[in-house]
Length: 152
Image 1 (cartoon, one colour):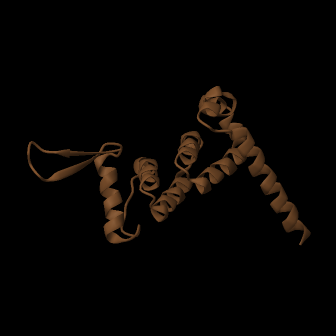
Image 2 (spheres, rainbow, N blue to C red):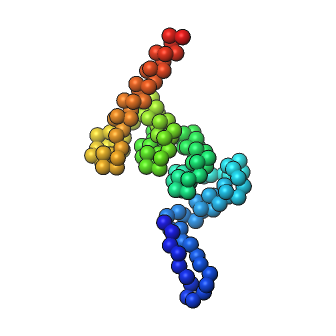
Image 3 (spheres, rainbow, N blue to C red):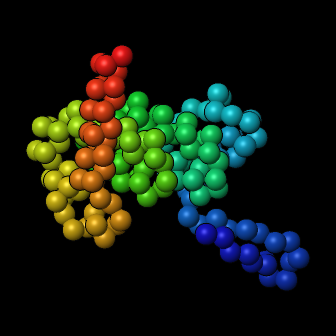
C-alpha cells in the first residue's frame, strides 16, 4: 500500500499510496478536511472505490455513507458486483441490503450469468463468500421478523 522513498539525495520523504486512484484519494482528503460528507458529490461510478478506501483507512462514517449511496443506486445489473464489494470490504449493512435485494428480485437475477455464477460457482467459495447461506439467514430473519410483528 505505501512505500517510503527518498528522492535522489533529497532529505524530504514522500509516501506513495499505490492502491487508490488519485481522484478517490482527493475525495478521501475532502472528507477529512471538511469533517463530513455534506459537501461531497460522489459520482456513482466512484462509490465502490471510495468505500474500499474508507475501509482501508478505517473511516467508518464515510464507509457507511458510501454503503447508503450504494443501496440507493442498486440495480439488477449492479447487485452482484456490489454484494462482492460489500463482503470483501467489510460493509455488512450493504451486504445485508444486497441479500434482501436478491430475495426481492430473484427471478430477474436468476436470468443473469453473474448471479448464477455467484450462487452456483466455485469461485464464491474460494473468495470466502457463501451467498446461499447468507440468503437463507436473511430470509429466516425476515420471516421471523414478520412472525413476531404479526403476533403483537
